[in-house]
Amino acid sequence: MGAIEQLDSLAKEIVDQNTCPDLASSATQLVMGEGSAQAEIVLIGEAPGKNEDIQGRPFVGAAGRFLDEMLEAAGLSRQNVYITNIVKYRPPDNRDPLPEEKAAFWPYLMRQIEIISPKVIITLGRHSGAAFLPDLRISRDHGRLHTVRYHQHEYLLIPLYHPAAALYNGSMRQVLVDDFLRAAEVARKATSFSG
Image (tube, rainbow, N blue to C red; front, top):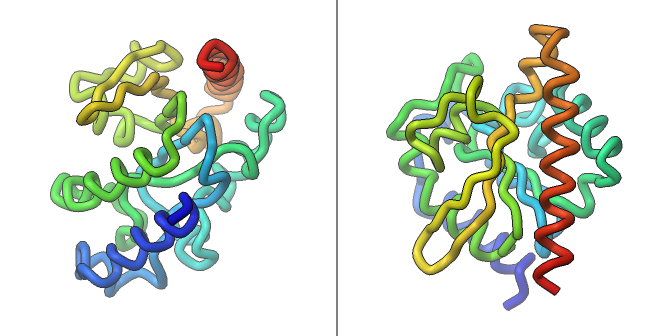
C-alpha cells in the first residue's frame, strides 16, 4: 500500500474508531491534511478553524493565506510539503483543543508522520510545538532547531509562531517570515545531506 492509500486508510480509521465523538459531532468533517505524501517537510498546526471545517482542508483562512505567502517566499508550495493539525476536527467556537483531545489524536498524528517520513517537522503555534517539546516557550524557542525521537524515528523539529500571530500583531510578521525562511533552509540542507 502506497503512502496516499495509507493516509486515506488512517483517516477512515479515525472516523471508524469514533475518535473524539463530541468534536466529531459538532464538526462538519474530518480535516486530515493535504500536500505531498512524500514531503520532506511536514507543517503541523493545532486544529481546524471554521474555514478549514467547511472546506475540509488545513490552513485555508487568513492565516492560511499568510502561510501560503511564506511557503512561496521560501520557494515551496502546498504541493511539495504536507500540512496537517494535531486535532483533526474543529473545536466548537474555535476554542483551544482540550488536552484529552490532543492526546486522542496524537497516535494518529505520529502514524501520519511515520507514513510521510519527513526530514523536518515545523510546528505552527505553541500548542503543536508543546506537543513535541513539553517545556517549550514559543517566545524563546521559535525558529530554533531541535531533535525529537518517537519510537525508532528521529526528526528535526522547528517550532514557529502560528501564522495567525502575525494577523493579530503586525510586528510579528517579519519574525515569522524570517523564521520560516531559516526553517526552509534547514530542511533543504537536511534533505541534501541525506542523499
